Length: 294
Image (cartoon, rainbow, N blue to C red; front, side, top):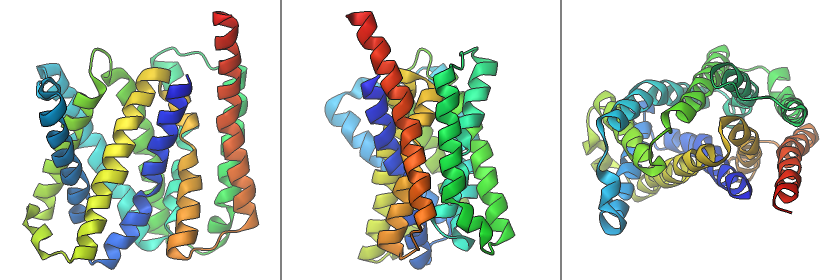
């Protein structure tokens, strides 16, 4: 359980930097599909190099693996990523991530319905804490005037991501997480490259913008996606969803430190509730594990 917690937090921190890199990408005059192309192709190339050096068997997928990867990489990922990055253009960088974090409730209910996973009292309390924290964090964002298209795109990203992470739990049965991750990323990269007009646009980037493009691939994709899949494999989608709620904390702090967005006391209170929602189920489950092994 502890490894699942750690992997979820690492993944969430990687995802938390996605709107930050998105804003930096817009500063570099990159389009949405161009940014997403760099995100997935950099990640695919680095993973390919790693597998060639460490374990080439990871590159041998079965037909079912390719089918699952195509579904996740050509349907769920493009829809969620496009909504999310498009929203960053017109609303503060933290807002899409904060809206996204209604998804643990959706994922927990979907997994209970589809996979018959029980929802314990501790899980319900944790979800309430997380939801209350998220409400406090983006209260000021809703109180201020926001672009309606950016808000709708943020909600769309939340809905698609909820469906995606629920599908991941079913897709991982009988699969090696890193192999599935690689082919999901590869399919997503091919889709966005086609939409962006090909990968040759990278030749026009300055050294600064090239670093932004690489950051999309390494931080927001390889680290974020790989650790997410491992976390889902170890603890399941509902707990991975709860543990990974440090993502909005990462985004809010990074937006404050790197982009100069305001950090309000109500946001700090919300982040404390989110952290409490993460710690509560982990402490409960660790106590149960100790009783079992004791």
